Image 1 (cartoon, rainbow, N blue to C red):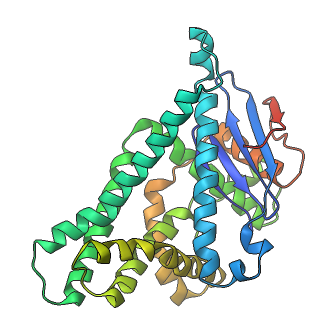
Image 2: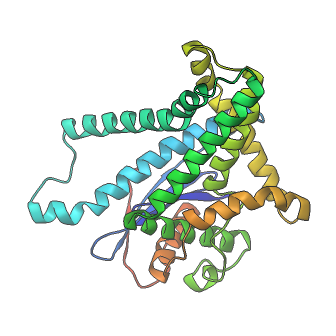
Length: 305
């Protein structure tokens, strides 16, 4: 399987053996960083077991995605750095600041999607752990949906969502064994059952069921225990995503896939041909094919992301 992620003015594509990030420079050229890569689940048998592999792949994808986003941000800043005469390489302080910002972002995310819903649910004074976990889960889902909708209103994020659509169209072209060109990818839709958006929605829904078995949290320890179960929840959700893709043509199975596809109508937008070209360059590079797709000049960087 191949998959990817949209970044700033570009796309990350990953295959079982490598990955590539293609980003459109301010001058119109496409720059690509590529490296060999293999998931730990393929290197160690125990790591590849069902449920366990999902949590590991979730963490790997997160780390790889952060690196790709950092690279795309650096490319986006090249023009400004050139105008100001600033050295494009990061100073030690800038690297420390980036790490601190990532830690802060994770802390805000955990607070918004895990801790705040718990605090609000506590205000209802539910005696039943079942009622507590249902309301807590629905609040968490509501926060997630509101967050996705609100960021979709941001112009820069809309550009990322267009590249997200380009990524899906390119993957469809590969899966259907079509020519990996702009013309070959353009006819496909932007919604894909194996999308990270669908995965996150399934994580939210699965967490409601898993947390019911943990009962009603009474103290800090119980709340931290819930966080410890997040990789397990991710593992279950990953298996469901794999199963749903295989059964996507079954009418009954499609009913379970539809909510994730509906949500992708927010997180994916129709790309233009230039964005499709970038996604296809990333995919062809990850597949060890000639990255050239259109007329844009493609620059291949040898160092890993």
